[in-house]
Amino acid sequence: MCTMTLADMGAQVIKVERPGSGDDTRTWGPPFAEDGESAYYRSINRNKKGIALDLSDAADVELALELIASADVVVDNFLPGALTRRGLDPDQLVARHPALIWCTIGGFKREPHRPGYDLVAQAESGLMSITGEPERTPMKHGIAIVDLMAGKDAAIAICAALSARARGPQPAAERRIHVTLLETALASLTYAAQNVMVSGHDAGRAGNGNPNLVPYQLIEARDRPFILAVGNDHQFAALCTVLEHPALAVDVRFATNAGRVMHRDALITELTRILSARDAAAWIVALEAAQVPCGRVLSVREAIADAGGSPVTGMPPAVSGTVRMPPPRLDEHGAEIRARRWAAFL
Image 1 (cartoon, rainbow, N blue to C red):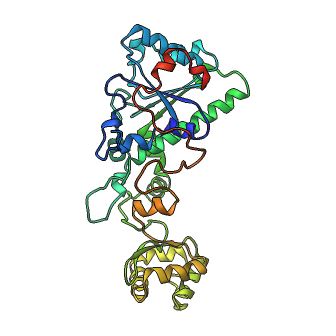
Image 2 (image 1 turned 90 degrees about the vertical axis):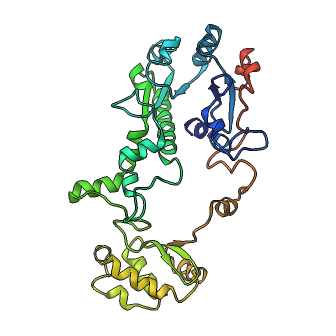
Image 3 (image 1 turned 45 degrees about the vertical axis):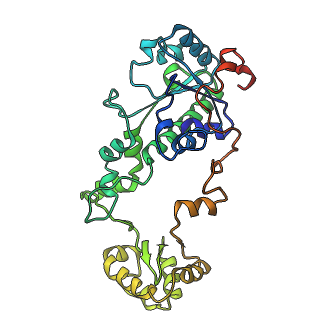
């Protein structure tokens, strides 16, 4: 995700994989595309060229060293010592190349030798403890959210390091970046962590609600649920006008957000009763006209199609930048890179 984000913005990326099996995510399926690549792999590897290198082979290590010397940035996700044992010590290489930025993405800062996986970080960061319905067991996020956030964190850190480098030479320590899944996950707790520190009470699961805002949740209309996301008292007053229940806006229990949070159950019960009189689509039209934030609950297929991508075939549009190349097949560009022709696309 880190290197794809940078590639989408124009970086020329060479993906280095092990011979034979390559990136683990190539096997994370089904589903698999017509060319045999897993959908998972295809989702995070566009805009890259690829080579397979055997880092136990001296010639391949030498080629890796040449690639590193030509690069602005190296990103790796090896456990501590794994690259050093193969003659690719990140700290030494950053010291040797005064413009090189090196980012290592790992699992755990205090226990760096532990393999890092998204699900473990979700569990140990507290994210799972606040996800799901209150009466059910903790729930992971629907996607590998910590992996994806860590990739974005790494891309941001790399951009900051490149910006600092542009202002003048930087010491090796400032060009050596470490991002871990657990730290990313802990940082993402933001208001949930602050709620705990301010209140002294641990956080719980709020299901589709929000611990700090009401109504800000999934709510039932006559035919289907939809999202109602009231962010301030003005929007709540507008909601009450749309509902033709203006008395709710001046009810002392509900007039302020703090009151609505305190009297959450009573308000949601009343809103559900009112909203059950009409279909969700009709409410959404009226609420949007009054600038009350709301939304449909779409399937992944529907959301992709709604965003202008294809729900079936291929690569969704890049969030930013352009899609220049499909994800590389294993060692797809190995011949040209081994012929030292990478300068043509760097």
